[in-house]
Length: 224
Length: 309
Ligand SMILES: Nc1ncnc2c1ncn2[C@@H]1O[C@H](COP(=O)(O)OP(=O)(O)OP(=O)(O)O)[C@@H](O)[C@H]1O
Ligand SMILES: [Mg+2]
Image (cartoon, rainbow over all chains, first blue to last red; front, side):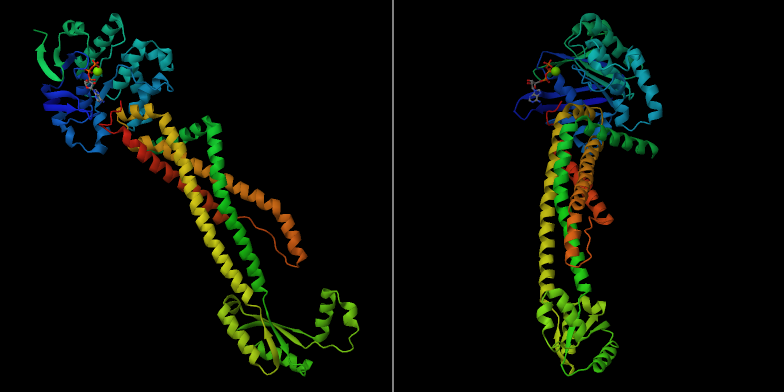
């Protein structure tokens, strides 16, 4: 398995318990939806997976690594195995589309010779190859999100984590985005997506995990 | 190795680019750094010159042996020859009463009054130039003077040692004072650069956050700031050097004129190569250290569990 939560509780410093005694497993190569009302703890759960936050209690294992025991200086190398997609894209607006997508490679010391090919391959996958010189600000919301996805996959991560990637997009655009995720999953990438949009769960027929007030409600297999 | 080098080169160029993109604020901070470095640098250069000046003075320093009035020229010459055998003595000039009188006349402006004297009351004088080893050590010099004074042909052995001792002590004090000033101003440079780095980090918070999210190491985040701090210190140091050289060339002509009036061939020298390199590199090192400490402090807010996303 790729992700394992065992009795995980997350309490924020203010004392609010965002996750309570959460346990679940996500297997390698799965695509899983994470749903629940606003404030249920979806983002918090993904933050524990990507080590933006530490669990207060319980154990989080990702890719065989117990995150509570991971040394601080190893965190960057851990994060390079994960592609992250954010609702607000988190692109750097002073850089071109190409440079934004290249950033994970530059950061990990990728050889400049192969960089160009990799970046173009990632941009090609999201259909933005012809916009590589543009500044992100000149792109539409859907296009910016696709740049964010290209950046998340350019490192060929084994895990793709997305937190409401289509929050601001209309139905058609959000279908496109989810189809992209579906395609990555088809090619072997484990995908975890937090979303309000229950439509895709039925459409794509994948498992979903539902949170309510910090507790795991059901682990339904909607493909049934 | 090559990739590593290219990456460093890129961040280096990037850091230079950042400095040139904010010409106003970077010129301002570099000027402040330059002033803070030029001050102690200029003081050290001035001190070097005073040292050189006194060394020249000490080097030409000689012991005057006023011989007894009954000594004639033959005896004086004999004494000169026998004293010149000593290792402690480099050489000796013999000044006859006539020469002494001539010089006295030309210098004192009392020529008319002196002309009215019927006989020359001045004795023979031996100007003894001590060997280098003795000239440099006040204690050895003192014992040499003492010994020469004991010779029966010598009436008076004279050397004005006190003022050199005092000057040496004063220069020592000055040197230390300048070190203290240099330290305080170096701290100032450290804080100025730290502040610009802090501002740069604040301006690039979003960028740092994203770089850390996609797996950038602290070293990667730090690198451009380290270069930026180093370049600020480096340019500040170069600028300081320029200021010192301009200042010295500005006062060098009047100094030369003044010293020639006193019959001393003395020309002002700005900082030498080694101290110049030291000044510029200490600027660079302070900049680098300051950036290192500042980034170290501010990077902590981007660690897990700090609610930063
Ligand atoms: N950094 C934080 N500090 C304190 N409390 C937080 C923090 N982040 C989230 N919370 C709290 O934890 C609870 C869960 O928040 P979380 O963002 O995980 O919910 P969510 O399911 O992602 O909601 P949404 O659908 O609105 O994004 C909320 O009550 C929220 O106020
Ligand atoms: Mg959320």
